[in-house]
Image 1 (cartoon, rainbow, N blue to C red):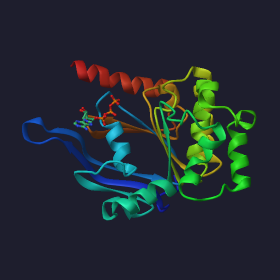
Image 2: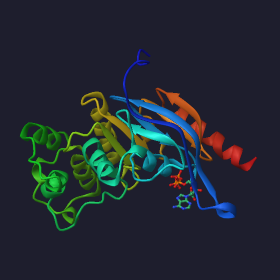
Image 3: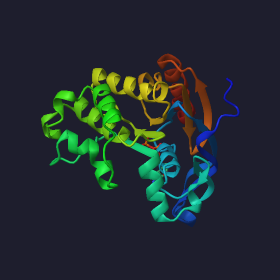
Image 4: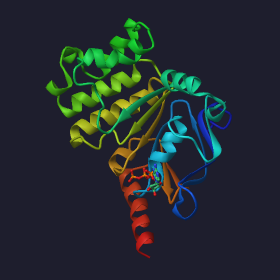
Length: 250
Ligand SMILES: Nc1ncnc2c1ncn2[C@@H]1O[C@H](COP(=O)(O)OP(=O)(O)OP(=O)(O)O)[C@@H](O)[C@H]1O
């Protein structure tokens, strides 16, 4: 695809994670190696307990691998101290969660600009306007989360994730709590992050329709990367997921 020599924005090599010890040890990830490039929208799928959250947490520096390594922009996260890790997360990664995670006492505007307030930075007016307009939030900036619909709240959460212009957007089931129309809006926005703004978007999802918006789908099973699909369609993703079901039964 002409991307062989392109710089990997994020990469894991021989990533492994074991929780607990001895008899109680659970292998959550084993020997996972994958690279993500600039402007790529990737979906991570797999049955419950297959290691998706663990994978994302290790990649984003929220959890420490037991073996192998995770790197962001060529920097091995394992070589950083806590302060440096916090800085990498703050500057390079925007997070979107299934449950929005907005602060209830703050207005939409205050929630969106919180990452900047926390690091003592001023909003870049042109970028801020572009993000707010892309999220369709111009008329909702004074509202508190409770005065917004679920879809609007998730768009506030997306704007908050984008306000620092991170190279990577990590979305953990971003449409899990939304109706299909609001979900489609969020997925189009994530697609735009990748295509127009050249951010690397990594999304965990259980939904084949959501995965259909991605450029590539990675399939995890029992902590291993077992398959990969480019130019996914909901139908092909659904077929692949069904094969996990039959394997689990058999
Ligand atoms: N903190 C922990 N302590 C012990 N075991 C854990 C911990 N976190 C995850 N696990 C185990 O690791 C395995 C992978 O879990 P993980 O949450 O990464 O899977 P998942 O694919 O995200 O699942 P789901 O789709 O249900 O959210 C599971 O067997 C889980 O029980």
